[in-house]
View 1 (cartoon, rainbow, N blue to C red):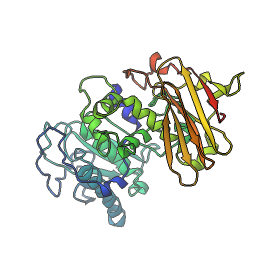
View 2 (view 1 turned 90 degrees about the horizontal axis):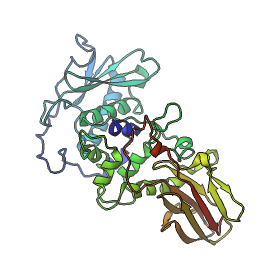
View 3 (view 1 turned 180 degrees about the vertical axis):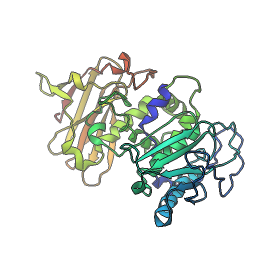
View 4 (view 1 turned 90 degrees about the vertical axis):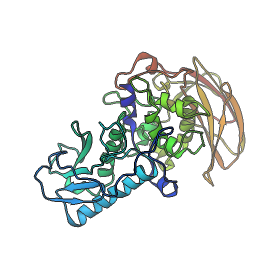
Length: 392
C-alpha cells in the first residue's frame, strides 16, 4: 500500500532531541494510558532461531545471542539508550509489545538479536515472527556495536510494533537529495529512485525548526497513528491531518527552502543545472528533464555582486510554491521570503547569498504508490523565471 511504501524513506529521528525532551505518555492522544511496563521484559527464545541456544547476554529490553563480554555490553548499552530515547522519551510503542496485541498492557518481551556469520551482503536484517507478533534481528559480529546497523534494524522493529507502517534509513546523500530534488518527494523507481535518501524530510518535521503546530518530537509517530486505517492514503495525507495550522504542501515547500543550504561543503559536487537562459535577459525556463514532479523541487543558487535587491517572478502551468532562501555567509542565519502568487523581492546584503526554490505543490494531495508511479505524480512543473538584481 502507498501508506507503507512511501514511509520507506526513513525512521531517522535525531537522538539529540531526546536529551531535552519531556517524557511522553506512551498512549496516543485521546486513549486510556496503558499499564506501566515491567523494568525487565520476559525472554522469548521461540522468536527467531534461539531455541536451545544458551549462549546469550541479557539487558532489560533485549537478549543478544552469540556474543558476550565487552562486545555484548557495547551493543546492549547502545540499544538500551535508543530504547530510552524512542520509547520512554519520544513515546513510540514498545518493541516488546506484540503486533498482534489489541492493547498496550503487555505482556512485554525482550527483542532477540542474533550474531550471525553471513547475511548475503547485508550487515543487519530485521525479521518479524508472525505467531508472536514480535520483531527480531540478525547482525554480523563486526557490526553489533555499530548504531548505523543495529539501532537502524531495531528502528524497523519499532515501526513494526506500531503496526501500520514500516521504515528504513540511510546516511544523507546530498547528490541524490539535492542533485535530483526534482523527483517525486519519495520515488521508489528501480535504480533511479530516492526512497532510501528521502529521510531528511522526516527529520525536518521532527525537529520542526519552523514551529508548525502539530509537528515536532512525535510527528512521525502521530502520522502513523492518525493514518486512516484500511485506506490507501499516503503519509502526506496524515501529515496534513496532524499539522493543524498549515498544509502538507506548505510544509514540503519550506522543507525544500531550508534544504537550499545544507552541508555547504558539498555544494561544488551537486547538480543545480535546472534552468536554461532564454532570449530576454534575466529570463529562464526550467529544463524539461528537471521539471519538479509531485512535491519535488528545484534549488537554484543565484549569482549577484555586492548589495542588491533581488526580484523574482515565477509563472507556471499549475500550482507551485516559490521561495527566496537568503543566507548570511558570516553568521549562517537563513531567512525565507515567500513569493506571493509567484512574485516577490528582498534586499540582499553584500554578505548574504540567495537561492530561488520552486516546488511542485498541487492544490490537492494525490494518492499514489511510489513503487509504481502514476502519470499524475510524474508530470513535471513547467515554469519560467524572470530575475532582476541577480542571475541564475
